[in-house]
Length: 325
Image (cartoon, rainbow, N blue to C red; front, side, top):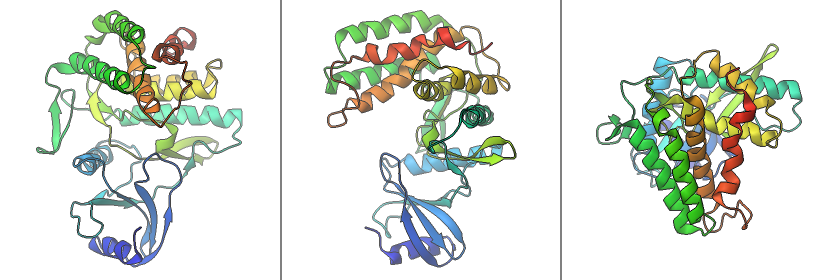
């Protein structure tokens, strides 16, 4: 529980006026956010960080996106590293305007327009580049390169998610492990194709944006939850939205995925070997979801499913999507 006095103290620390009210935010997995209204405006308070580096990293990424791109992030991203008010550090940021992508009752034209807006916004985010692929380091408050380069890191990371899933659930079996290695072998050469490292959100999905209508078109009006971001191959960031579009179409209707892709490719150019990388990047993305969903107590998937049964339809979707056509 957070008292009104604590909310006021946090607002006063940044000169954000007098506390009026606070409202819980529905959705999200971890309950880190709450809406706060003051006499100066509407804000989001984000607290109880998972890791020491979470909020400094989010601020670092948010500031870069605000300074270098037109991505609609919440700015200024105000970080108080002190723990005297709540017992943990916290962030305050402006509340973003817009509505949820997942609002019920949208017609087909709106869903297509939103998919295009998601692609447009992702291309905008990928305009934030870095001289090398790497991830945030708290001690230096900047990006440090992956020790052995992108290819080694992404393969190692995929195997790490596989190991985590295998350790806590028998649903991830030895046959799954052999299949994962076959996907890696088929994609390895394509991973060496040169690219300019850009910001990769790693969790770009309808739950982490808000949208609004501008005339007859939709646009992404807000972007949030930057904890997982790093700098690498922007193609990896396409996989979560592709999977969401496929889920909405129940794997059969690929219209939304194609709309998203063509909007993105209007600003970017697919590199040679994209089909092979698609398989590996999609597998890694689905492994992240699979690992979380098979943790004890989560039970997102039927107990007779294996990793391959879950992930392979997403990987094979490339054959049906005509993504770059």
